[in-house]
Image 1 (tube, one colour):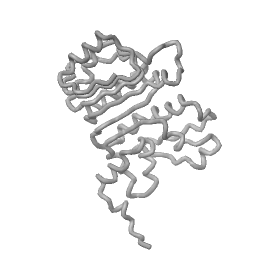
Image 2: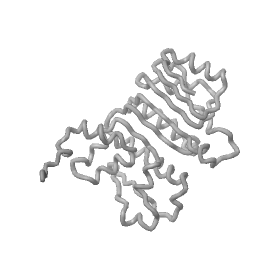
Image 3: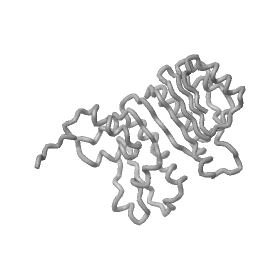
Image 4: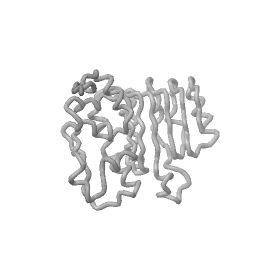
Length: 230
């Protein structure tokens, strides 16, 4: 039987392309597979912070200590806190992913084609969403950006009909590289964030509350929009 390690002989760009198809947490887990894959995840061109992959990384409480590898982010270490929590609670799954987003972004080394972040409304209230947008557009030159506020989907805040209000600084989406934006479960009350958004080609708004006047103002600010999905 042949013993050649064909995967390890692949170029970094090919390995990064393969790993780019995984959720961000799963991509980072490949570092434990071999020395060859130790830093490949830092060059993936897509990051998907999807909590669906978290249960694989953080098993049930009575299994965590023996089965969960510690993940290194440069000088930082990210691991489960070891608290007795209910793994069936989707809020906790999302929170575990969100708390490591900053470390992942700072450890990542190349520009991104796309990034998707699922978060709870407290990430918006704390300013994390605005911080991520600014970093991804200015430092990572991201081309496709998607955010999903998961409070509405799981009815954590049933008093509010829609997700958190999207009140961001004027022109925050005017990055020259940004071509696609997607928002799910937001109350979009203002068009100011889309001022001078001349390079945006695709806008997708799912389960969003938005007035016709605000939508018209957004479309008017996006001179080269080709695809609008509501």
